[in-house]
Length: 121
Image (cartoon, rainbow, N blue to C red):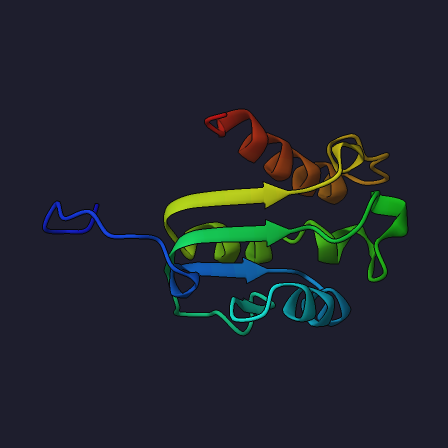
């Protein structure tokens, strides 16, 4: 329902798909034409009723730019805060079990794990 308690049909314009890597953005853009797909930087200041955040890697070890980039608190915050109604996280279960090598990595992993704990399933 919108602000006036009016029901509206969900359209592709109501969905943002966010991915951390440009290569994933490219692949998603081709796979789901018509849906807005981009990195968090592209969607700064924009919102949508539904936001889908694709983590785009199977494990922290496979992350091209390292755990600090993939688990960035700023990126996670921007992705979550773009959603007006529903936030969907698409992630491998392995991303919730990283081998942290520093207190900073533990902090980053904890934020992602806390997001999952708080999720309504």
